[in-house]
Image (cartoon, rainbow, N blue to C red; front, side, top):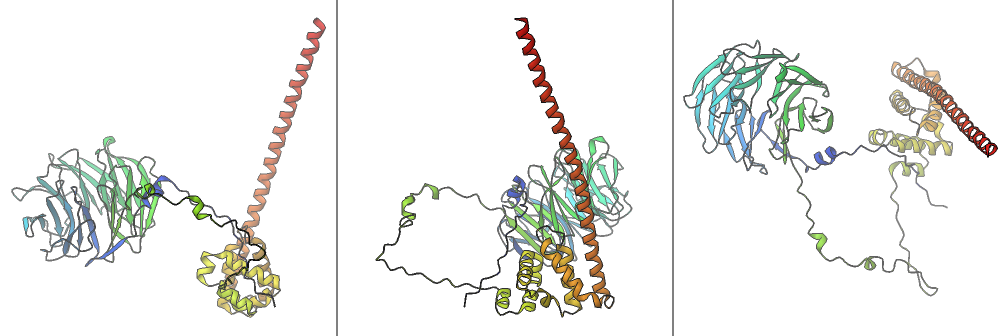
Length: 519
């Protein structure tokens, strides 16, 4: 008896993913490290000075992590309730944070107790930050106010009450020490100048604003709210430059890379999108397990840290560059590896062949024992049906070759018929599967035609199959019409070219005859 031959799954060409420099660069990070926090991570901020530690604000604590540490190297926990928005000063020595009770605390990185406490907000303070002069702090709270504070005297300088809803984000200009920006749930972004008593610019975002970001030059502003990321030109009075809608849910955080050439946005749809700041097209994206609340990139782009709603901190470190020291070591000569490769056994040699044991897959084992229906069930399981449909189609083709496909398709219940029709309706329009699946669709229709009308689920799948085939036929007819038009155009061009060449030849011949006559 001949040995069983496994089902041959044909290899189809795949459309390769376009590999760009951005793809190579952003894939150059190690497997992420997961750190569990006490609550949802609402802010991550890197120290601007080496060794680039980062502050994580979650629940009622602020944890300071070293770049490669999985345990906090320092903790600030002097909060009665939740802490919000811990942010470093430009020199990395001070840290400021808001709180649920409405007070703002200023910490020295080398100490534990707050250096200053600023009281003035009547509700939670979600956004705090330093102005670029390092001696003033701006804040925004749920009492709709945006305040400016003096660090040495711990007093309020000015308070702006221009927003009509919670102030949840803000940033300061690195170019002008008097300018800061706040974003609110009243759909507006306001630009304030500490030398004036009211805002100097108001921008209408159109959605509750979750994050704002100023480019290092101070001329461009990015706002995020709803599904939109919008870029505004501050120097032109807040003119909208581009509106990006690449996320499926609310965008919660923004950040720039060290060169300012890439913009990153995180969203509740579990994705981080990376945009080019020249074309504003998505050049790469990361997928995470849960909704994203905060995002930060280290000053040297060596570490990406993402905070999620379930309290998990996802840390990715860049892979070190490969050293070329090993290539300098002396390697064995090439002939060492190919020695004996072309040796031909002589007549007196005794050849020992090692038997190769074939491991059969589940569907091959079932086919070997002539269990056609179970073999078909095995290849309709989700891992095979969804990710390797060519295996499912190959088994169907093998059953058809054996003449047992009809019996394998028959005798199925409503759930199994629904699964079969879903697969066929989805894949029948793919040219690589069409010849086999058209036969399968014909057999399913013949077998289960008597039960049409008895199940709404099965009837719906038959209608979807009909619709898919109808659309494909329409597409094919349109393509044939286009092909006919193109054939006509090519034929016309070819005819004109041939006529042009004949005219040139005849003109050249006439000129030759005239020249000979004159001589």
